[in-house]
Amino acid sequence: MSADLDVLDAALLDKAPDEADAGPEALGGLVDGQEGTGIGSRCGFPAPLSTLTGDLSLPKIRQRLADAAPEPIAVRPGDPWHRATAATERIPNHLTFGDDHVTQGQLVALGVALDLLPVTAPSTAKAELQQAAAAFERATRSRITADRDSARVLRRSVQAIWRDPATAGDGSGPAMLLDAALTAVAFAIHWHRKHQHTQQEAAAQQALVHLQAAYGPVTEPVLGNLARRAPGEQTKHRYAHHLRQAIPEHAERIVQDRAWDALTTVLAEAEASGHNAATVLDQALSQRSLDDARHPARALTWRIQRLGQRHVPGPRAQAAMARSIALQPTASASTAAALPTSQRSPARRR
Image 1 (cartoon, rainbow, N blue to C red):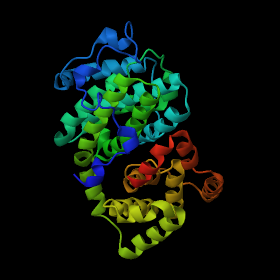
Image 2: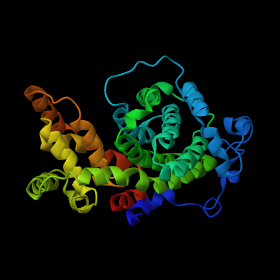
Image 3: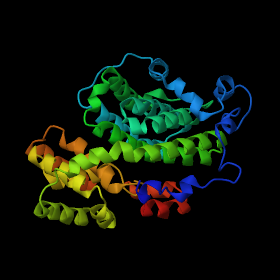
Image 4: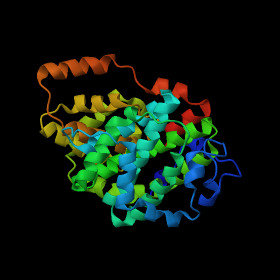
């Protein structure tokens, strides 16, 4: 696995000496830093993490999904993997600016989404993803009442996928969801730390380690397939030129990334289907800052793949979108302002 897969914002993973090597058995008994009647105390924390994979059986996951979203679910058009990924990409914003009830609703929905990944993952990644889901379930245990409505899109998208797991197709859906989940879990670690939820923070840290281990086996085959269809050098040069104009602070890192060829493929495919490549790239960049993205080139690849598969807008709609993008402030300043200074510079090095 490449070195960059092992790099994580140091500020999000720094551990106190007594927490650094905490095993699963150290995660029990407390909820939100209090003893007594919380969900964690009632449910208990089983000791070895390896014994928890049985809790991730299909009936168990479906029950958790039903608990998280008991109301009837209306099926929306479009790719549910794309909707789930877009909703997961918004979780850091909810954790940064939402209240505790919204945050809890987002964490519970993220946990249910993580339950989904082992079912659709390649065999080489299933064990790591099962352990990640089991660990993150502990990070969702809280006495805070969850605002389920705030995570409605993610919950409904996950339910739609459960109805037809075959929608994973070539694996790009699980890959893009996992990519977004890595950032969301890192923000969950920071949120729990800020609120002094020691047990949940440790559980989220464990989940992140397992997700990182699964990242390569899940995403590399998809990126490799895309890279083999990369356009010619002249087209790549045109895309790189626009990228340097649109986002100079990240452009060279993106162009040098192993995923650059995959990114140019999805841009070319969007263009072939009638989209304007520069406009699609600008839209992808406007969705969310890349400052906290672990892999900016890959994050852009998944975003552009989703945008490129949408219906091509007409000329008037394209002009309106261009005006909206030009007027939209970037999210990087507000996100950076919400994090401690020590957490900002490492995010740019990832």
